[in-house]
Figure 1: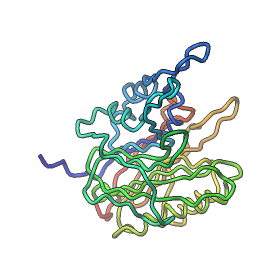
Figure 2: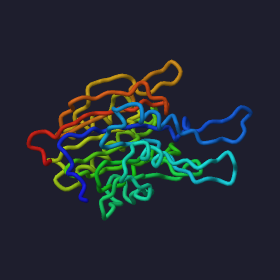
Figure 3: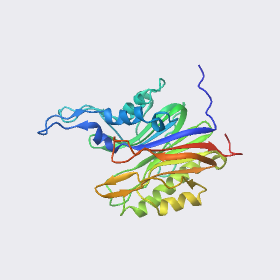
Figure 4: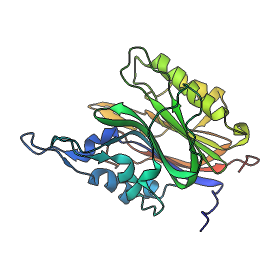
Length: 284
């Protein structure tokens, strides 16, 4: 059976899942850690703003095979949340890891459209990075982001072509010392989008963890023709500090509604979502 055509209106959700730290439990006394997946699954099963998404973007997605030590259980946030979405076509085998060889350029294209992609780098005995899961088959492009000279973290992005739509997710350098890197990284994602065929006429969404409330990444995207979603609740909290680090930008599309799922408990970040419609005259 042929998949249904991608509509002019999409719901896109994004979630920094914090390397599944909230998805494992340590019993008293520091004994063996066991998987505890209900926090992530609970978020998606309880809240229609997430569960009914057409496109799910993840940051700090983490996969790790089961280790020899009892304190290293197998973790796969991409598969866990794909299953929580209850998409029958989801297949963990469609995801893959690796980064593009050239920073800032679209690469790693999958020759046949698939429904998920994971762009991860080695970290903590597994792979850490970003992912996109889609209701429809898509073509994915890995983007390796420029790395700050002082940073131990290699960061990645994914640009997905979902029918006429372009959806990108990113996880920019940590604040506050990462300002220069965030500028270069956001420019690399924009360059990857603009390198796609007819990108200037196609509806596009950039969503993810910017690790800043304002500044250079936002200016770069605005100069590239992208407009932000209206300001909303803070998406990240630590102690008494609350910041809006996660953002949505669109080009050739109209944001019908957007929000933050403040009740979610699966991460230190709160998921965000938007309902978007391709603008009149856009290639959709």
